Length: 478
Ligand code: BG6
Image (cartoon, rainbow, N blue to C red):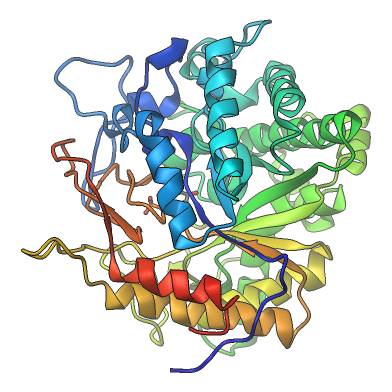
């Protein structure tokens, strides 16, 4: 196998998680109910269901996570043993503002994160924090209609300010909204709820609602950037987009044009957050469809003044598309993606494409001209615990080998400025899309099944030792 390039000394090597997927303790310390708390467990054939309230007898995997809330002191030590110098997690909004609309924060929640971050720093690990990672207060969905409602801008700004004020000595790198562009697929109710807290009726225009909700998130995000810089000019606040490059299936000009529109559609979110304005093609699209998105002059100014400091992004896979002969140039993500015959897939149907990572990094660099931070990348797979208590996961090592190599080429050969790399779910946790435990990403195995049964014991997989070696060599020994 090929050797890698060595990354700079200050490069951040880490792991990434989100509060609702591993903390558990869903009611501890005065925590409120988040949208993740009302999602049942599913699997790749059965979508997660959102219930009106928490219903007895149903399975809600995020209620237990992997009990990180209680076990983090030992877990952080294990991360340090692996060699991590950073750790990306999120702050559960409902631990700080249980309903989302309170005036005063919940001290027990703030204290929990202060202790967690202190434990990281004691172990030489810098925390990297997402403010909103698929876990907004459910009350904001029920009582306000989610992000379609402008009042959420005020609530989010308050939440962000409280976090920056309390943690700015402990946390330098922040992100506002996780994978804000997943809602490109607005036909999927799961994405509308996870990104924007939208639960819509059949007769509403889902696409228009999505554009309005996303706009309010952009304004909230831009306000958060400004507030962070007021509080501490050392703080760095990033966007967070899911980078799945969309290729044309063939070299037919119509397919290439379609793929270009697909990229414009999926990444206009980054345009607004990095460049501070909406692209022309989208304004034209709204006009043609008579979409009335409420955008004030003050909003426009806020967007310009609150552009992000860096681009955080996840990378798992690439997509492909093909022109369908329609009159209007238009990309509908639920309808217009096709299989790429050159790529293999994971057991969950995600196309594996290491080269797409380098392609995506170059594409974003040319477009947004900001430092980047790979805050998720990884391979969800079924793992086997052997009789002698080990997990051999060569498939995961291969995946990481190939992706890290492409990342290093983008940095060393192409000159992309990259802050760090935090593979997703370096410790097994609850899957966001399916609620499964058995879709595992970790280099650390957690003994628990989809129903929450198991000893919760942490076991080092083969990939644990492999990544340890990669970090020790600063990426040279792959
Ligand atoms: C990203 C999310 O979509 O990918 C994570 O930011 C998520 O929250 C990860 O867990 C992997 O997806 P999944 O659905 O396999 O858990």
